[in-house]
Image 1 (cartoon, helix red, strand yellow):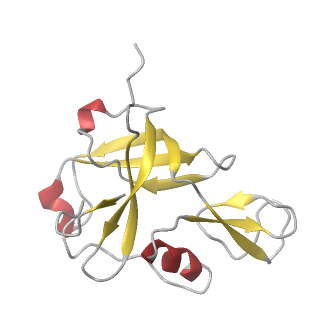
Image 2 (cartoon, one colour):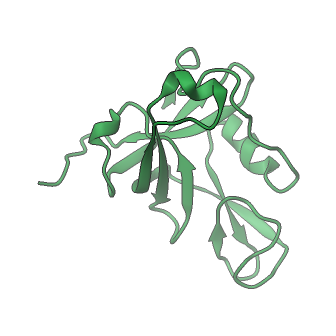
Length: 152
């Protein structure tokens, strides 16, 4: 799925992802609507964000696995005072940490879209959606999983 590029979560003018040799494969895959998670070639530990060295065993060799895009809200906050001028018009907005179901302890920071902030909750099942930006970059966002029911 994707969120229409003419309805971005944030307006133009927000800082763009930093592209460097370590993170470039991740962001190139995002352009193709593929969510990759880096893993250590020696011990197999998955990690995010991409890093040059495994924090578990110290190996510098890595590979990439494609995630399903399903997960749950691990934690979140609602931002009422924006640190960046371009996002002032979006207040309030959410920042969520998503735990992917495919990989143990892999957390991604993003936003939950298509969901009013007052109905967000920890453990909310979510699925990946893509926001295609006018600058050509695709950003990963999450939305409540289809058929989700809040626990009673």
